[in-house]
Structure formats: C-alpha cells, structure tokens
Image (cartoon, rainbow, N blue to C red; front, side, top):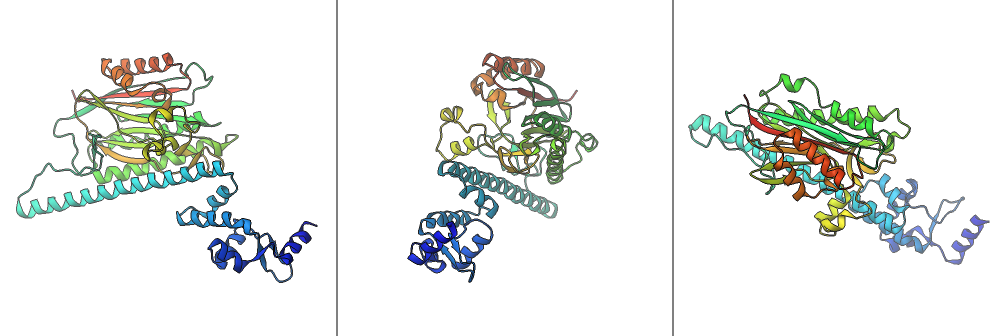
Length: 411
C-alpha cells in the first residue's frame, strides 16, 4: 500500500523527476544516482519497471547538506552518519570533523616548517663548508610564540654540557572512581602519562606507555640527528597505536576503548614529544609555566575559534569529547577517529622542569595552582605528591596521573 501511495504521489505531481530535483537541489543527476547507490540519499520512489527515480521536494534540504559536506571534504561514510542525526547532533559531528581537519592541517604545517628549517640549515652548512662563513649555532624554530622550548632545526639545543633528567611519576584513583585507568611512568629515558577510557581503558593506557620503552632509546643515545629522531618518534608513535589496538582487542567493547598519551623521550641530548588527546605537558622555565601541548578535544577547538571561553569550557556538556586518541577501533569510540600522535622536538636547558599530567589534574586545578606547586617542590618526588594532593583537595572526581622531570647537568 505504501508503494502504491508513493506511485499515486508521483502521478499526481507531488513527487518530481530526478532532473527536476537536480535543479532544486543544485546537484547533478549523476551525483544523485551516486548518492542513491551509496545509501546517502534515497529517492522517494524508484519505478520498478523502468527504474525512474522520483524525489520529494522536501528532500532538497537534505540533498544540499550532503553536497555541502562533500565540499568540505567529509568522507561519504561519515556523511551517512551525519545526515541520519538530528540537527543539534549533526552540528556537533560536523564541528568535531572540522576541528580534526584543522588539527591535522596544523600538524602538517609544523612538519612543513620543520622541513624548511632543516633544509635551510643544511644549505647553511654547505655554505660554511665551501666558504668558511656563517653562524654554526643556528637552528630553526617551528614552535609558536610562548613555547620557548620548541625547535625545528638540526641543533641539539643542549650545547656541549652533558645533561640528564631526574624524574618521578605517580597515579591516584581519586575519591570517586573505583578503578584506575590512568598510567604514568618516569625513567632515565622516558616520561609518560596516559588516560584510558572505555572497558579496556586500563589495558590501553598501560600498553601505550609500554610500547614507548624499547631499549633502542638507550642504545642510540646522542647518535640521532634531528631528522632521524623525528623518524624514530614517528615509528614509536605507530608502535603505541598498534599496542593499544592489540591490548583492547579481547575486551568486551574494543571499539569504545582507548587512551590519551603524552610522553617525552630523552636521548641524552634532545627531548622528543609524543602527544595525542587531552593529557598535557607543561614546561617550567625562568619561573614561568608554559603549556606545550594542545588538547585534541572539541571544547579546545571551540576555544581556538572563539566560540567558547575557558570558563565556559569547564562546564560544557561535551568537554570530554576527544577529537584524537589511540583507540581500539573506530566503530563507536567516543572520539573522531584513531590517528597518529603529534611528534616534535624540544630544546632543553639545565634548570627546566617538565610536568606531564592527565585531565584528572588539569581539569580541576588551575594553572596558577599548578605553577605554585611545581615551583615549591624541591624535587620531582615532592612535586608529584603535591600535585596529586591538589587534585584530591579539589574533589578528586577522576583518576589522576602525573610525571615530573628536572633537567640538570649530569654528574
């Protein structure tokens, strides 16, 4: 009866032909046929005899939405999910998609600038070899203003003075949660925190950090150029992604399990940063505390584009929505998609103090209190105890993980 009713509507003129609908929606008939085949935009009626497609004029708005989403580069599989949502949920999904595009574009921009600096430095080196002139200490810089430790060139940043790190890490379940899915590690070559989520969150966070502990880092101390170190960081980040997938595969809901990861790898002359999600890294230098990572979250993207203030973000209903994380699968994970972590190099100086923490600390303790606690602590062990104490004093609603490292002259 329903099919007969639609046929009557087609005959009576309530439905329009594909050609007329193409003019209404400003899509080509070819595109409409393609969207029908993919299940993105089904016609109201397809004649079973001749195959002619008929559309309801009310479908024009949905057709335009599909076309607009294609224009911003959204994959067809994701468009299918968006058009099935109500307007509010679709808006959130589109914002999350575009924030991820911008984050990936920024990462490619940083790599492009690194390549420019790296090749420019090589050019200067060749000039010095052939002409004996130039500044032998020049390095490039891909870090933004306000990030005093980011480097993009080929210099080590550590000078001739041998440096070492002294560090400590601590996790705490908090006062509300019954299990701890956060993980932290502090060693002579690695500082890391990970914040797991989902049924396999504890396994994911542990696996991500474990994947960053190969002995190759100790064996290659001081032997890597900046370019080689970046390649090694990329390989390590890929290993962490694979480790998380393998770790959560046996869980009841692997698609919804994953972890953030923020880690610093020390080669003896440089620090390499690996970061994905909303755990954070801070640098204390010269009495100032600098946040040196960017949250991969929906609310951070809204803060960046001016549609949300820091104060509003603290109570936003989607404040926990991640745009990037290491996940077991992409089916129903509470993130946009599993992607590669950001990697970059850090210039180090004797006297620097680094703090890595999960959002169980940063979400409840403001940066002024963090700075005061990090400055007041005599050593990394005292610092992590103070920081966990601050999180508990603030109510401890989430698991907490933190790691602190001091850069000092070796000896």
